[in-house]
Image: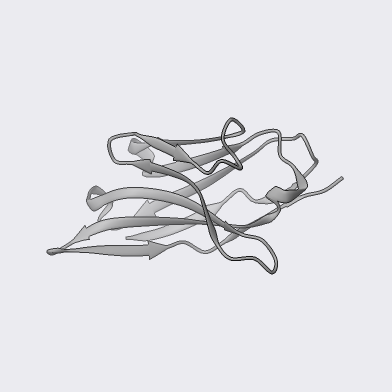
Length: 118
């Protein structure tokens, strides 16, 4: 499974931005899709997760502000970011776990930079 992330950019505090993660390859084998982020000087952290069944979970730091969703027809998962704050500045990565033979595979997309600044 290959992933292509897009949608990053500069956004003002309080604004909104939507990130996209489009999968290709064996997309029917995807179990779960995550968004992670890594701020300068910090470790990568999980932001939001959506399962193949559609269940979503969020980090406490983004709960109520970010929404993860998917369009199965487009093999795309979105991260809608709202009421952003400077602490949301980071490189955002999408990630999937998928079935591969009898094992669980993992794939990362390239990062997309989100900068929250006035």
